[in-house]
Image (cartoon, rainbow, N blue to C red; front, side):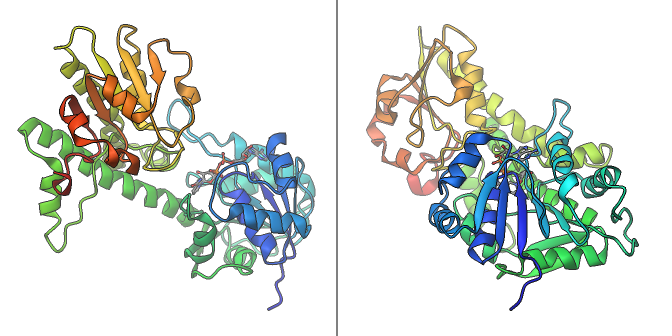
Length: 422
Ligand SMILES: NC(=O)c1ccc[n+]([C@@H]2O[C@H](COP(=O)([O-])OP(=O)(O)OC[C@H]3O[C@@H](n4cnc5c(N)ncnc54)[C@H](O)[C@@H]3O)[C@@H](O)[C@H]2O)c1
């Protein structure tokens, strides 16, 4: 099939931008990847990914060797632009849109008549329109779609949120269904064509604002459901019941499917994006806000539990097992385990041993604390009075049961408490 999109410029070559760029290049599209970080640009041009992702290296090497993908620091003219820059939150929990603004300013000089501009960054409702307005202000010579009924536009603008899961990105990019939200109906059609070279999943067209909210809602749904499980864990602790057993038995109901509690919610998506809904609708997003607060409170609850159990020791040593935000990965962004360790280590008299088999050294958030030591898992357990299991890494299942039985164990993950583990 002949595709109308021959050249694509991807702005932001991180977890989302790089696999998207490499996938497009693997389908014969000429791709230029833009990043402000020169180390990222150099790595890509050397055919190397700057983060670990299965199958990505192979795809990237092929794309760079064939000359279909190259990286640079400045956007170049293209049929389509994909913006995949970060959207973290600010201190007041509203979205930091400065990266998107910078990307818009960078592509403004090189967009041309017929170009498609797609915002892939997870964004609050209205951000795609804001992007179109910013581009329009920089390029008065071109007509942009500033309303949904705009006709005769020169540059088509759309929002296509990304929902791939790290660790399965290369496959999910092809297979996941896509929501394509256009500033106008024609914008959605034009944006759909950008993904046509590789998309095997279904594509659903809508308007840009709906697409923006769909992405936020997906993550808020997960957050609210995890908060329910976390709240149950707090209630069960008060009632002296095993939350894992309660959930297991409740889930025997044909229409009940409660998620698993944990140390909190981490990562840069589920722990962040629901705030964009709260910021947009503070009076109405009551459940979503409370879910965030419940999940954010869980690390402090666990730290308090550790402190309470430590009172009976003269100089207690605490082992914190697991630092990443989900099992069996090395990503510690927004990790509740890090918060727990920081909470405990702020008392300079408290000795804290930390262990995570997926990390080679202490993550940067924990550097410079004199009462903290990064050690091997078994050593941490053996030297500790109290063992706090903060993440359900598979490796922790191999800790000898008798080693744990000799210590006070606070298990936020259910690894040692789930009925099947008993
Ligand atoms: N990682 C995920 O699993 C995931 C999933 C769905 C959605 N998202 C969303 O996708 C967006 C990107 O996330 P990510 O994980 O790829 O981020 P990332 O931090 O891995 O990558 C972003 C890249 O953009 C670069 N950058 C920043 N400003 C730039 C600019 N002005 N011009 C060019 N490059 C610039 C950074 O140097 C970095 O390499 C975010 O909005 C995120 O919420 C991420």
